[in-house]
Image (cartoon, rainbow, N blue to C red; front, side, top):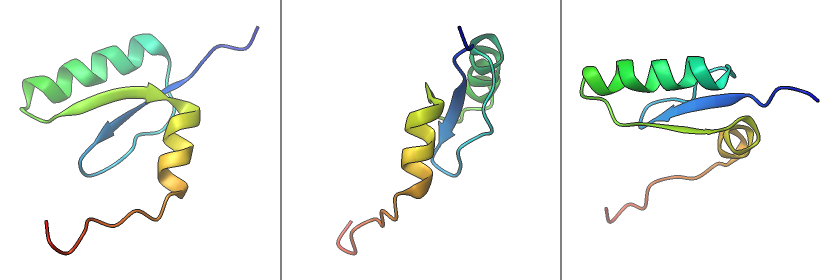
Length: 59
């Protein structure tokens, strides 16, 4: 079975794929810095990277 990879998503970026343990440590590091970060699957990260979503002009 292939190991599942995860990425960290912040308001500014999406990380490179990493193991679950690495992702948890990175998320804790971001939290200590006061940065909101979320652990998501590598597949979801790819979907978000390929999405050309733009913030609405009214927000």
